[in-house]
Amino acid sequence: MLTADQIYQYAPPSNHLEEKIILVSGAGGGIGRAVALACAEHGATTILVGRSIDNLERTYDAILDRSTNIPAICPIDLEIAGPEEYAKINLLIESQFGRLDGLVNNAAILGSRTPMNHYKPRIWESVLKINLTAQYMLTQALIPSLECSINGASVIFTTSGVGRRGRAFWGGLRCF
Image: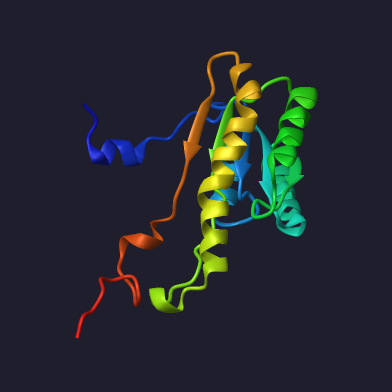
């Protein structure tokens, strides 16, 4: 059994993801950008999904600086996207790559850090749509491409560590 130190020290070989096609949602910044860059650095062809074309292009350029694989950009606003938009991404993958070997569902928003009685229903709906519903719909739409993976595909759902430490308005209710 590996110790925690051994796990944290693991470094995959530089070609670990060679010839793999990996889609990363939320690839324009933060964790998604870091994942997309790491995948490319380890040999994968990446498909960058996010709502900001400018941010996706910055990630695209950073990948070209580190890898010979040319990424693809798929701009999509997960807050308003429906089944048709997700189906188009799958068709794009099928036509350009023939398969999908990995899906990293990373796109998310934090929402408001405010007391519940001040939390706007519209923000709540956006958080749920982007962080939960969109991830389900994207995964479901990409199953045909994932099933074409040669050695079996992987689907990963990420989250931020932002909720690990309590902050104002994230604690329990107070009764007076």
